[in-house]
Image 1 (cartoon, rainbow, N blue to C red):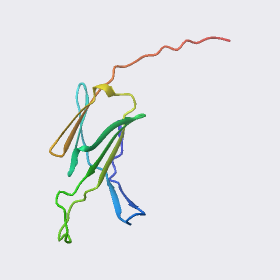
Image 2: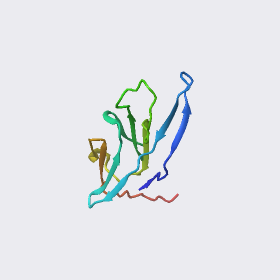
Image 3: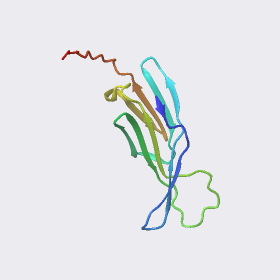
Image 4: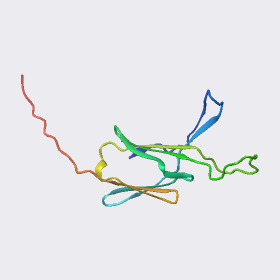
Amino acid sequence: MNYNTTLETKETVTKENKKQTRTITPFVNQYKTKEGIVLVMDLPGVNEKNLEISFEKDSLVIRGESEELIQQEELTSLKEFSLGPYYRKFIVGNKFDQEKTKAVFKNGRLILTLVNSEPTSIKVTVKSE
């Protein structure tokens, strides 16, 4: 499985409020099993309603949006981690059965189980002209 291993931060400026937003690429742990693979990633500040997992063409795409847990009216005195939109894309091809994919999200940790698809063989008939 090919996937983006770089930590990407994309800066964008919206015209409405000139606010900068960053896209956070979460780190992932990958475990191989007999049935397929398991992906584990932490998504702090994300809740289930702000999490989207989809298959798009030959890729598995994970999107999430984190929210501030405490509404701040004053300036932050110390902020060591970032919140914002999360995005991660894995090129999976047709190696996994999309219908059997399982996702569990608990306490900010996403556990995705991708089950290997059954190998398909296609016989091509050759005709002479």
